[in-house]
Image (tube, rainbow, N blue to C red):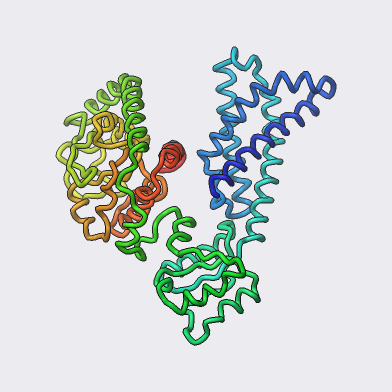
Length: 435
């Protein structure tokens, strides 16, 4: 459902951009609108696709980013400004392809599009906030309270809590039926611990004639937060939801890893040489830094990165803020993530993939085993980037490492080529917009 909504918004954006182009032609040329529009349509359509890609990187197709009317305008303006700058560069770099360099027309289209798209997103924000799906939650736990708090603070989540019953009394099996009739709610979120209570099941049975949907809280939490409710799942959940092999997916992913890592490796050879020279010129030591990591099935392998720290640096397992061990060149490499480039060799070898749970250092992995179900993340091959990396900051404590594990297990459960593509696209956004 989320994918359908995103696709609908993308199509709407392209339609509004085309409408903005029509308005520009009418305002700028008056006569001969049809002829002028046909001249501009193809080159501007190419630019509009580029704008949509930039909008995607700016997270403008996630309803969770629609927090306030001001934030919508600010995010839209920033993305459109970047789109305009990139468009000008593209127009001048490829004049033969576009056959025109319409600076004024581009500005006018941008203004019209900003107005139209802001009105669209504002309408969506108000509609979602006012037309949220009413729900009833049965059960109580720290994660349920966290979810309720999130929905109250984020109306764009699309849900409104109508009633919260921490327990369902045995002596009042028809209480739910009465609540449903009074409120008209048709969605119930059920805590897993209540699903095995016979009197609760009996109460839910009476709701069948009312076409009520009962959603397991674990599924609802996953849908809302894009991670698993690790604190509330048990071994049975893993048996039911985790697949250790996806044959066609595994073959397709490995083929893509080989082709892409080889091509990028060849293209980046000049960059490898330049970075190597800068590292040698800035500090003593090897250019490449090898480090033992834990891979698929808990097997140990050597991960390669460009060295960013001073020679023989010891200290904390996690990198600290303003860490004095990092060299001047190392800071640049880490900021741009260019220190990760040697891992193309690890991908080509098959140690890691482009996407997957980030491989941990052997020392940290040993300590993380204290987390329940930690080894589940080793069912799949680790990745250069992953779902946890684009959704959560780099961990600097065991508590944060545990939070990242909830995203890693989500990836293991839901891994697909589409999710892998989504991770890669959002990683590009992360590189250019956030550190």
